[in-house]
Length: 45
Figure 1: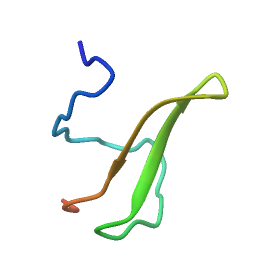
Figure 2 (figure 1 turned 90 degrees about the horizontal axis):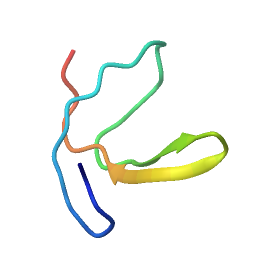
Figure 3 (figure 1 turned 90 degrees about the vertical axis):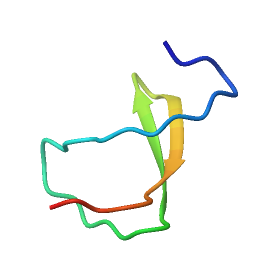
């Protein structure tokens, strides 16, 4: 479980193609609410 203020590294596999670049900020939303945010550090194909 990740708590507010924690920092983690994670690998994510997207279900649909999305244009993405390194060092771009993103948000993870669920039900219209932001539940996470981060920065793309590396793209693995």
